[in-house]
Image (cartoon, rainbow, N blue to C red; front, side):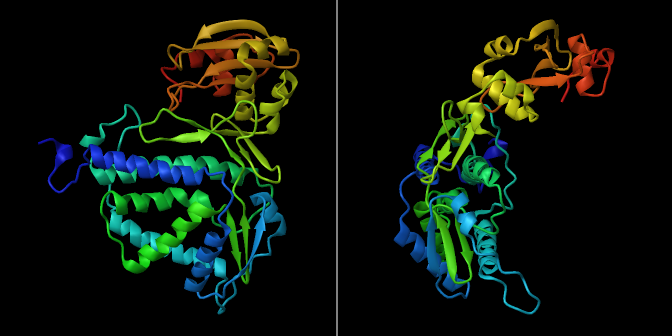
Length: 378
């Protein structure tokens, strides 16, 4: 018997794995939904959560996007010594306590089984709870919380206070639902009913902000565009080459290039001048990829000064270009992305550097000779 098949561990058959993928796909579709919000369902679930938190039912204010919600948000109530916490704090405490109890039931804190990103594991040879806790669960979290919700958070220009993500809570709701429907885990009745309220919100609305007497809710977006990453567990990330990846009814938009949030000009109007003026190396990389390295080099009028093998990244090449105002070193990322590709970066370096090895060493605070002796950079 293999070490992975120790007695007491349950392993999925083809039927259970297929069922798990079906449920995962259903929750991911809710997280990425562009259907109009189900306002009655959302308001009923939030009203019940208010009641569980000991608060009176709120009135509801619907907005066309998270940005519009932040613009009309009532100020959060400050915590006071000896007084009751505001309703948003009581809701946060309740959901944190709920998830702690649910985690105990699914064994999340005890599960130390680790799954490789590549190659895709044979699901029949991996314990079922490890597949859920360390496979499908993290992929949903990265797809929904980190990619989609993270891009929205980054695009908001002002603080939004304590809020919940509605459809973008689907990643954690889905994990418990997978355990309930695939692994046969039974939650306490009260916990199951409270979880169902959060599930209703993940299926019915966008972000929402609870305040005393009022709850502000944002509509779901009109557009969500993603690409599938080559991952065994269905990881997706935001990407679109010719327009926004997320767009709301009030024209508030988010742009992204292969998972990296970028200003709209990177997608809509990239140019060599804008690229060369950009200080953020990730944004600059995305913009160059958007137009293509050959087109960028030609438009920017860059002259190839030299090329050399990269001793810190065996098998890859360094290229040093000279422009009218700066010099640019083209390097290849030392690590492989989850989709199997390697990112290329254009790093600005001082104009007095004439050799690619000297330029690469400068980025690490080394001389060219010192960099040439590296075995592998990180």
